[in-house]
Length: 520
Image (cartoon, rainbow, N blue to C red; front, side, top):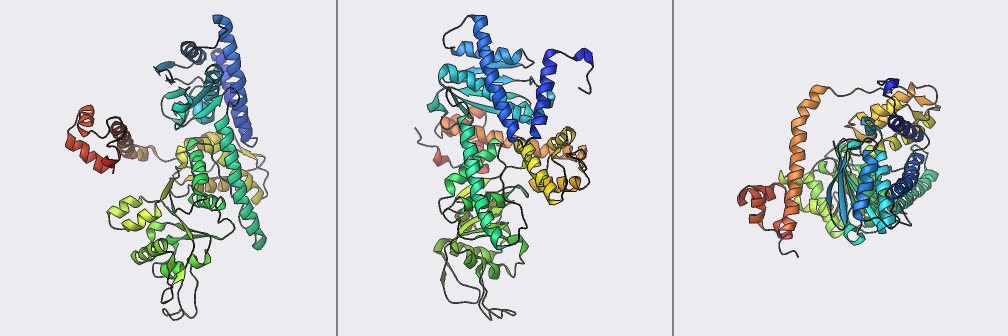
């Protein structure tokens, strides 16, 4: 309310401010409390809104789709939104919004979108028996508009993302994710506790923050692929936590009692990488005075995590391919073939496919490593995770430096949300550590953070625009291919371009036309 006068104060503005301040206060209490509070408010408020609507319209029977639409649009628009119906079918309706009822400051709390999801979903589930709510776009996430899809047919909604609601289990999907999250973290911490008995504790127990939809999908993928022997390629920017995901896969696998060996391929000199990975025999080269077991042998029965796998030399790539294909290796300078049983998880912050095209990475090795691919989103695309990460990091650092800091101020959290975090979680940890050292009291009120210049953002705009348009075009082409079963002529007509141009775009986006032809 710093920029408002008392004359601007209205019941709606007061409630908006109250909710936003309540969210900030709740963040400081372990973060889980914040999400629970949002769900509780949404469930009880939704029941109240529906009851009020029924009293005004004298409706006692179950609401039909028209009445339901009137109710959800009315309650949002009456508190400052600009919602309208975008589309409606028997099984699904979509509403759009150009003005958030919580105002511009909702960007500080994208978690509040769950309130809309639970209100819409709870009312729909009580009247139609089932609902799945997907928030495709959100003002809180800087999309400019909100687009909310409510699906009431469980068969149609089966493969769609979103929060699932029934009249008996209003937040089933969230509960399932929380249980999965707990299982993964417990498995990781169990391994950490076992290792801590054997060595001095230098690190904190591992913890994954996964409140954002993209990270929750990663958790679901971990549960599916962990019990298998499939190789996994983890892609993501520096500092997003690729090794943490690799450790989670190992912890949830049957190999969890065997070693997890992480190795940064980029940190080992090219002349030593083969010896480090595969070992060497005595006399294999100058200085090799005894037999050396490589990382593969030390990881026997367990998991070998190859970070920055793109930095491997051509010779090391060839040897690695053989190990994956044959399950055996020879030490450098050796003649004896050794059988090895190791699961490979690799990681890179590069686009390996581009390196393959440039003949900088073996094509056959790429496909061996890329049986399953996990793409970890940058922190800028995970706004829901930010307050939880901040709370976790502050608590750990406060304990490390014997400080009393328990939380960050609202102004600090606003700065954190507004910053793009090019260095991701690692950069966030660095900034918070530096700031916490100079903090006093129970709340961090200053953040040692410099924002990028406007000039830099302007220079980047062209690249951002081209990348966004390319993603939209690729998505449209893939959808059109499914709809027209690979008929290039029809797609060309839809796009207003020649068939040859469509083929060029298929090549550009590496879309296999054969995958779409002959589909029913």
